[in-house]
Length: 418
Ligand SMILES: Cc1ncc(COP(=O)(O)O)c(C=O)c1O
Image (cartoon, rainbow, N blue to C red; front, side, top):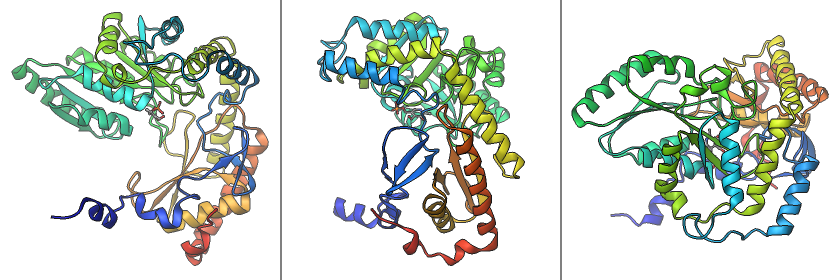
């Protein structure tokens, strides 16, 4: 037997083990100042490539104005209680209706946070007779949702349609016996590597296998497709997505999320998603703020146009400079370099302190051992100058990495604590 706290103290977890050297700098860093292309970090101005403010709405004057007015008019408390009991308003309904129209679905249902919302949606949609088949690189919220499922679950190798088909064959064998159903889950855009889920190929399998498709389009909503309706629109298969999901945490620069699909299915979710039925409803300033943001997505296409101008300049410039940006076909811009976790810290420290570039860093186990992924999120608020200085800085750190410079810098020296 072991004391619970003793067990935890002896194993702080895969990220927690870095806390002593990394907290406040690499993990839980504090970006300060206005949400923008340039922010303050550790007392210095940096070009910020780490926030998912795709359309630049976070600090847009029209957004700031409505957020301020709605907070003044309603406060943060209203409405009180869970939506099903006492926390419903006509604005919540209006937002759902407008979201449904925007993503070309019959109906939508709001959820307070994407993470909890999608977990509960997966939980509500499935029972123990059903089989869920999901992409192995799905976001943690999908993995957690699937973990709650009491029937069979199969992960297929990321975006590998042959593997998906093999799993569908197994799933059919099972549901033929149990009398259950099959749910396939993928993402519109995979947030680390930036590759879109192969929705077109997945949807084509519907001809041969009986399943429904749930797509988490957190990074596609507002950024992909002619009208911004996301990866399904971009790939011409929006109608074939049975349950559409997106958070407001990215293009919408807000809090909240939604699911969209057929009216009866959304009604079912509304009455069965436990994390929503038994939790306080989204406060009014968010709902009103989200209505405004959605209006801007609909009526101000210039934000998406500027975003893509920046995405193309950044990705084109990096490729021209010989960087490996993998197979992204979205705004998410990964830069792959070779090196271990310790080199990665030294390199990112150099980027932040000496070149004024702030980007996220991803290492094993998210990507294979010996690789470093620097992840850049271009937004509509970046400038060509931001892009140029970043590419130059990347060229410089690549030189240093290849010359072995970062092997000479110890982690203790680079871990600048605030
Ligand atoms: C792909 C994906 N799904 C779901 C979520 C969770 O959404 P939320 O932040 O609204 O909880 C995120 C993160 O925001 C995400 O990147």
